[in-house]
Length: 278
Image (cartoon, rainbow, N blue to C red; front, top):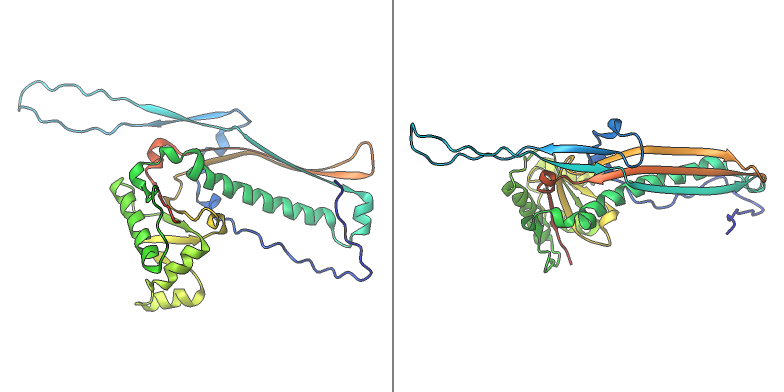
């Protein structure tokens, strides 16, 4: 299918941008292993130390040994995504835009959206079974949202993480615009000057020490995801972008290839909680 190039008699150079989804998930992932991995198929192995507990005994008596078992998990670079757009010389001449530059901008948006959706789906689909059952609130009977329940849900998610011994610092809750609206209607910030200032500036704010982040990536699925920063590991190993002149015609190939991998390691799964919303 050919590209569509608009050629009116009078054509403003103004470009109306697409209403792109704001990308928020990827920036909260852990990418520490990026420098250690080189190509598709590479694997990093992470070790998990056991939890030890004292047992009752008799003073001075022999003490029974406790086995010290270190477990391991792998993060594999196994996802490959590609994109190619062909732009002919004729299309470049006919368009009054810097066509290559504008298409490159859309490549960047597509990549950012790809990363956000990958993180979201790793939590809600790929490894949702690894998240403790106690951290998946109302999974069998999702709540019907009200302002009061929006506020209560954030508190309940925090409690779920507390009970998994997750540190309180660095917690983030990702919410849909509708959930954010209900949360603001709960008046959870109005009792303080700082709260009123936050409301005035249009930010969602903090609830119980948790940063609330609004994203359209959850508009369709409606869940609320609370996690501790870095609970999801993501490695983007190869991020290639190139423009190559066609060898059999007068055109350019704008190409991109991204190779990446994600993993929620066992202990980190405890640092993720989900509130299901109808």
